[in-house]
Every structure is written in C-alpha cells, then in structure tokens.
Length: 167
Image 1 (tube, rainbow, N blue to C red):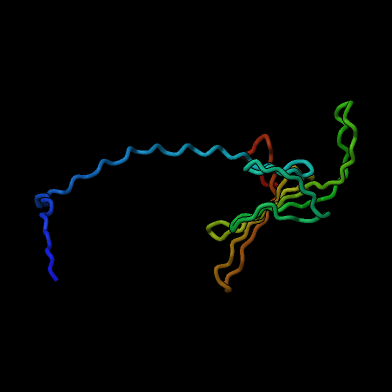
Image 2: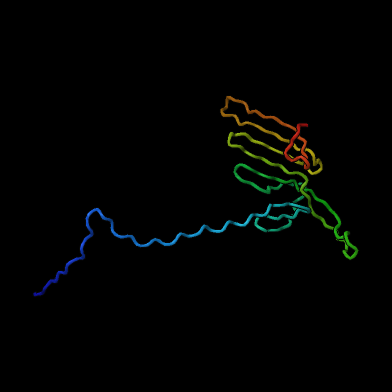
C-alpha cells in the first residue's frame, strides 16, 4: 500500500502570558418592566368574591357552616355562612323586586402561627362590629411544661385603625 501524508504548518501560538483576544460582549439588557399591582381581595354581599387576580364568583354555603376561605402553613381564614333571604331591586322605579335565598358571612375566624411558636386566634362577628375576641397561646416545648394561654376581648374602630383597646 502506498500513500503519502501531507503535513501543513499550524497557525502560530500567541506569546506566553498573553490571553487570547475576547469576542465582543453583547449589549446590556434592560431590566424587565415591573409587575402591575395586584388588586385587593374582597368578599362582599351575598357573598361575592373578587380575587387578587381579577377573578369573580358568588358562593352560597350550606346553612350555618364554617368554610375555609384561605389557608397556608401559618395562616388560616375561615368564615361562618348563615342563610339569609332578602329582596333586591327596590332601589329604582324600573327595577323589579327579586327575592334572593342566599347566605352571608356572619363571623370570621383567623388563626396565625408565629415563628416563636405562638398561636393567635381572632374571632370577629358581623353582629358585634366593634368587638373582636383574641386568644393567644404558647406551645409547650416539652411534655413537662404547660401550654400558656390567654384571652382578650378587644374594641376595634374603623375611625382609629391603629388603636386597639382591651374591653
């Protein structure tokens, strides 16, 4: 078998200690635009829910039943749904009256767990709009310790939202 091999010289190497030339870097990108503000979540009326992302729905719960409205690992919000029959459509001359068999949320219950292992429970009733019941407890760290708990009846005011008075 006969053949020949041809060797061609390779390109010269850069001098030692000098880095190879860099390719140009792309222009910097601008930061993304800020997210639009979220809408507040609202529960109103019979009750109609308006979520933070624009979702809307009505809900009629079973009579005198507590439903979980929001729940995470350290925070829960529950509501007591109570049946109500009411008439709508009496506010204008051309509105025909309509009887609605719905439900209202008459009480809400909040449970919050803190990083310090405290559990806070708040109860707020629609028929007592200026009062809230607050219970707090400290979880026992061992079986030999007792759970410490306390309860307070508080006065709340829409006109003074940063003030809470013990009843």
